[in-house]
Image (cartoon, rainbow, N blue to C red; front, side, top):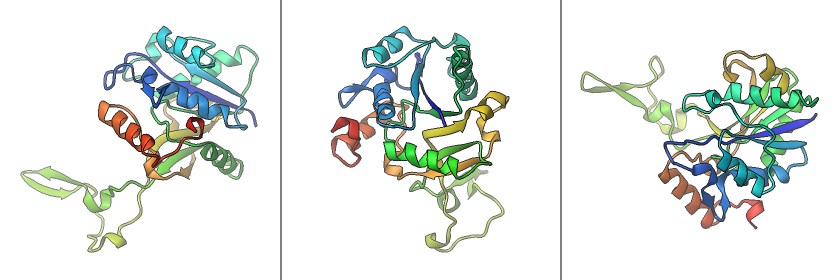
Length: 238
């Protein structure tokens, strides 16, 4: 099945200004997604969706394709991702392209590997009733065990009406959506009108150590330290 990879990289980030073009181990952050895509035979084409001329120029400098510019209304802080992906599909549909799968590669999650992309495709192929595959990981923090809210000066469990667990080993395993990758059937994206969460999705589990998501200066420095120490190795940096 033909796969389009979309790298959404808007300008105007407030949490970490300029993060999409900020160098991470010598490469602008968004370029890590381009390098990953180049190593994945499952991907037929990779495009960058941006509203920023600076980001577009950086992407092109490193061999990225920017065939359209994203409208301003799809580049605000509160713009959801679904219409961004639908816009990318509609722009390329006009060219006569009709991709069957869309792989979302957020630049702020550079810890994914080519084998993750391959496993996502294999999972979707084995799940004909699923609309997509979503990357998840098991975090060190389990909300059943640790999460509380404060009411009237006292703490109460965040998740009500569940048994009280005496041992950590008895707590149900919890996974989090980590934004490392999303692989969707393009027809699902074309018809969905509200949110991707409305679909039926299969979980692709990756180690949480590779699931860093960069939204702040602290996030960036943690990811940089993990990569520089060799705790996580990215093949395009070898």
